[in-house]
Length: 246
Image (tube, rainbow, N blue to C red; front, side, top):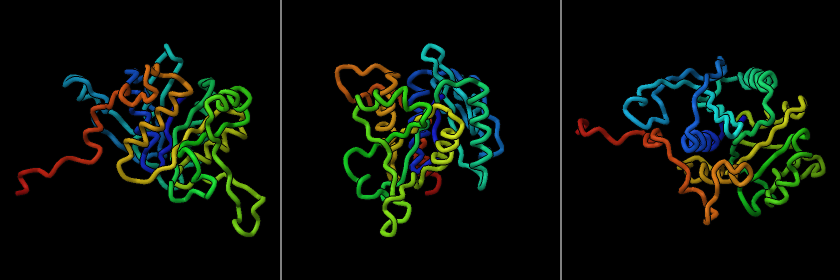
């Protein structure tokens, strides 16, 4: 199962858009929940006039059996105080559906990094103990950097370290709950700022692709040009000013 955290810059959701659009994944259902702001809109992955009028809602499920991949796309923010019920419902569904692994695409505020997190790549990963044994070696081969823990009380007690993901939405809660339930989960995240987050989405989806090889990297290592941008991205920054105003 691949899904986004609703986090800073909506980077996870944009990266998921690229995966669904490029792999032409089939919508197989909805994730019904009262934890998200209700929303309805047109088909974000429209390829013709005929399928552009299909409706989409706030949480939908897509499938690609050939790659044993299921994707949950979330399109609206969480209602206040509904993080925990959503995590419970999601992990219950993960267990009942017998998902082998969960990969959460997330982001975190770049301006809140500590000194250690400023070094090197802005991409990080986290693995639950249940998944660590299986893929830790692969992460080392890829030379990926694990998300650093930071001092719980900086300047007072630097020995006690905690996981801190500011701007990460449900990321930390979902990860810690998965650790306690023995669920195999990986979190892939990018440090970023609000703004034009399309380059961040490409960076995150390429990071995911290094590991899962969802699309084959050709001669050039940068696969950005191979991802198919969905039609809905034309509206990322709203429409132009209507001429009728003038």
